[in-house]
Image (cartoon, rainbow, N blue to C red; front, side, top):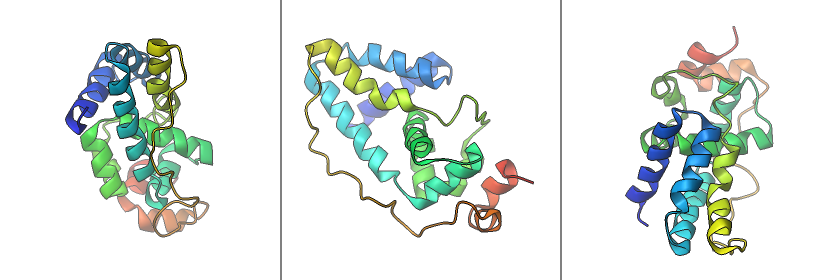
Length: 173
């Protein structure tokens, strides 16, 4: 599976789910179950690589603003959700997290920002296809600390300065 096929699966499931991350995960599992097990593992490798690439302080700051706070787990689920938004939003956000202010049409923190189930879609599909747990993907794990310059997530002024567009649109007043 190449990168284009990976993003097509993500986009197809998102469109079918009309943006609902839980429905998107279910549709993604259905679509992955139509593939052979090795293709599902390829999908999982693509997903994991992008998940690790999004392990940055900059994106954590963006998630913090969008979600009104983001624990370690909430940021993990946010990164899955971000991948689920498709290539344009994902790449734009990874390159310039503040660009999410223009890349997102709407953001409802009750529904958006939590793509936990998307993170398990490949594992679930693989298990349905083979009856076994997916093997290790051979992906180097992310570092213990996010990449980039740390940001004080509790400092509203620092967040507003670092993410002016996101703060103006989604930050606290």
